[in-house]
Every structure is written in structure tokens, then in C-alpha cells.
Length: 375
Ligand code: DOR
Ligand code: ZN
Image 1 (tube, protein in one colour):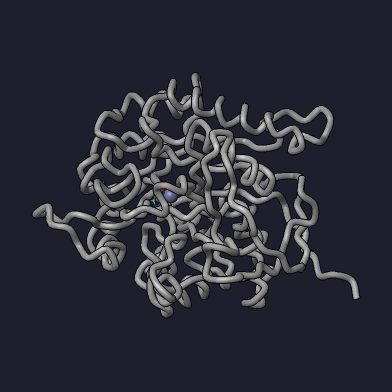
Image 2 (cartoon, rainbow, N blue to C red; image 1 turned 180 degrees about the vertical axis):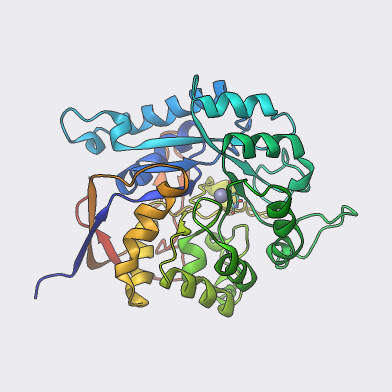
């Protein structure tokens, strides 16, 4: 019997961290092999909050892509035709309405969105606002020029600067912050990133609208619930923000992708950290999943019996929100078991462990779909 396979337009990663330097040089290839474009997260050190920094960062990404000549197999294809990094600003206190105008114009470097991190909630969130509603002038300008806001939707510190329970942060954000934000900025384009709770899913299902309010979903929140995060001890490779929640939350996330709604798309949130930070007494937040993300999305959609919804989720809904057309080239996945058996090693000799790694994953995890050919 012929192997089951699926061909879809080249996917669009609505949320990916590539870092800089040796990490970037090591991980970018895995994204570029699977995704035609990616919305590049700006929480590097220092954060990206000027068009000049974004331009330089984009150059670094493209040079890593061209460094992997096997990705550029098609003669005459430019680097950007193969993988286009779509740059974003970090909503730091320094970011001004003027920067938004400059980013929107694309004169130096086109900026596709602004990302908000709640102060203290996650990796490199120390430059964020405690509460997104404080960033009034920037938000107003984003609304004026039509630049989308990407939300790390968790309340970390409450109005009295007291930390909320990390399992409740998203729930509180959905109840107390998001409705106000949408009310106060009726034309702002908003994306709720990495939905992880039933409350977020319900809110998006009720209020989601193409071009106005959309949401992204990670493979990690689709695959796991917190029992696995604690199975046999704490599972470092599953440690991320928002934290992986209960089984019923995961079921809700699965149900919404199964519906094939036009305002829900794939955002891997692949977030590499060096081994020393991931396996340390204070484990870094972030799941590196770019070597397996596309394969895991396909596996979950297959399990849910909704492979017909995969292309919309992976390749159409994301670009539409950012005013872009879907890719013209395609990618093929085949149903075939494989495992991740090795960490990625940077050119500085640092190991980075991927989600589902045989050694550090949940134990012998087998992935059921794989890329038809490694580009
Ligand atoms: O787990 C996470 N890791 N969540 C974030 O919001 C940031 C990311 C990172 O940059 O490592
Ligand atoms: Zn992220």
C-alpha cells in the first residue's frame, strides 16, 4: 500500500524565536526547511525596538539561511524566496508612535507587528509593560496605521504588583485585560498568542474575527497536558510560558483547531535555549520545537481526523492576518515513524535539545509524520 501523504502550500509560522549568533546559525535551518515565512519574535538581548535593529537582525537571519546551501537548492531562488523573516518590534518603554510609523512605512525595514510581553512573565520580558493598557500612545498609532499587536496574554503582576498564580495568568488576562483592550482600540488588529486555556479558546471562538482578533496555537499545547509535564519528575523540555495546562484545556485547544476557523493559525513558539539554561536549577521558559513542529501539527490533525483543515491552519490563516498571500510553493509530509535522537549542536559546541528528543523527552517518543524530503 502506498504511504499516506499530504501536500500543502508552504506553511507560515506566526510565532518563532530564532535568537542571535551561534544559536540562530544552528536553529534557523529547521524553520526554513519547513516554513516559507515566519513572524520573528523580538525578545532578543537587546530587544528589537528600532527599524535599524530589525534590519540588522533580518540580515543575520538571511545570512544563516543562505549559509545552509541545501535549503537553496532551486537555481535562481533568492534567500528571501526560500525563507522570509517578517520582523517585529518588542513593545518596550522606549518604543514610540514615531517608531511605529517608521516600521509601517518599510523604508528601512518593514515591521509586521508589535509584540507585548508582560513584565517578568517569561524569557527576556524585563523590558515589557506590566499591563499592556499602559502603552496608550503606541497602541493608538498602531491602530491608525493598521499594525497588528501580538499578545503574550498573561497577567503576571496584578495592580498591586503582586504575582498571580502562573496557572491563572492567561485566564485573568482573558477576563480582565483583553475585553478592555478590544473596547478601547476598536480598530486594532490583535493576535492572542499561544492559547493554552479553555477560557482563551472560548473567548476566541466567540469573538475571533479575520483581520481583527485572531489566535495562534503551538504544537506543545496541542500535544501535552500538565500530567505529562510532571510525569516521572518535571519535564524540562515541556517548560514554557504559558505553562502547559490541564487535559480539559488541551481538549479545548484541539477542538478549536478541528473547527478550521479562519482566525486560528499555527505559531510554533519554537524557543531554543542552550542546554546550560534548560537543564539548570532555574530552567528557562521555552520549548525548542522547530525540528518537529510541522510534523506534530500534522500528527495531531491526523489523530483528530481533520487533515482537510491543516492547510488553512498552517499556510493560509497566518498570512491573511498580516495582509499577505499564501505561499505558492508546497511541501509534502508522509506518514512514517521517526524519532529525534540527537541534540542540535551550535558552531560554539553548545547543545540545544528539541521537543520529543528520545533521551530527554517523555521517553522514546515516536513522531508519526515526517517531511517527504529534507530540503
Ligand atoms: O516559553 C516561552 N519562551 N515563552 C515566551 O513567551 C518566551 C519564550 C522564549 O523566548 O524563550
Ligand atoms: Zn514566544
